[in-house]
Length: 153
Ligand code: RB5
Image (cartoon, rainbow, N blue to C red; front, side, top):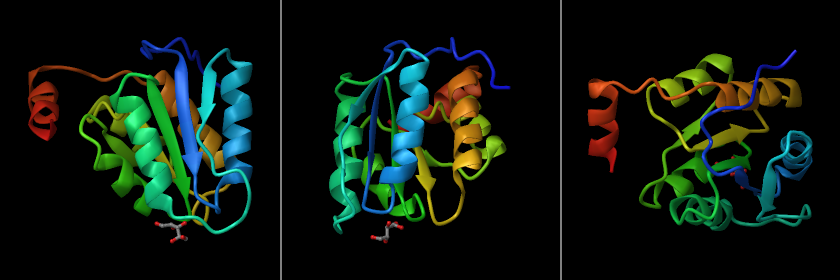
């Protein structure tokens, strides 16, 4: 039921991390990515002990910005805190996605390289749909979108 994931991810390595809210969803997304042939750098957290989302957003942001990973996924209760953390790393464009439309437009217009998800807001099936849209949608390019992304940089 999912589309062709032979997308424009140049480097088939994903960095993924969450705070204590996210390990169950992280495991679901990681398994799907691995089944599709991607290498997943799981940067934690691994248990349900309370941790601070900025540490994990930063870890994924640095992995993507340095080129160690082609794309990233970050998860916290809302997706908001951890997206803010990832976006503080230059070169990262992290988008909180709640549905297929937000994931699709984050790729088409913003060339998002990190997707942020909130486990208190969406369930695993919607998260999988977001991942699918994030994987199958290419940046639409074009002078106006490129100009805006360059201004973000
Ligand atoms: C819990 O730390 C909660 O604040 C976190 O998961 C996230 O929702 C922050 O944006």
